[in-house]
Image (tube, rainbow, N blue to C red; front, side, top):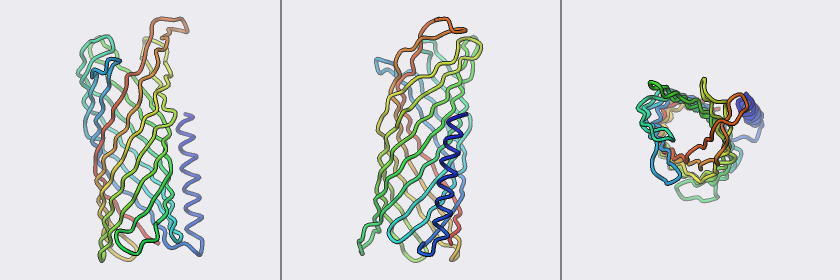
Length: 274
């Protein structure tokens, strides 16, 4: 419960800050929007010899909410997203037993960014930004025959920095965004139903990146609609070897393999402008 409470407290603080800023007299603009999205989730796990153990892939529906405020050349924005669904699981256990199953995925993501628009008069309008985020990802691998499933909960903070380019023509706005990410203090809690005690493993920090291409159209002075395509790359390093226990007594060992996560998707949203 602690990670969820921490993320919720962060979101409430950011929302309060943006709402306060929106009421200040020198604010140039404030907007908030909500949309629906489709995320194509693709994950691979690799053993210590870097051979592929597991691949999971499939589409996850979700919702995506944003809020932003502009003051002179500065912009602050927050985003919260939730994606969930069942996807295909194709792989093997760490002991080599083949598995074809499914996994239930739930991804909660919060991020906050602060941007500075460079004082260029020519197009595109260019902004540099930095910020951070928090991801809480639940992965429920379903049992198959005599092979028990696993419930895994991943959580990590991230540092993010990037470049945003905007082209405006009439009521239309095109946006190209690219950012570099770094996972911070990633961990996974593994629950073994009816077998071993749960295990909490430290994972390796890794670099990643996100790119987005968006189009937005003004429907009225106060309302706009948008379409965004995105691609994201997240990696998590393997854990160390940890002792498995049953009722506190040693009963074996476990480690979390290295993970490569390559996702892409689309978001359609409506945004209100003040």
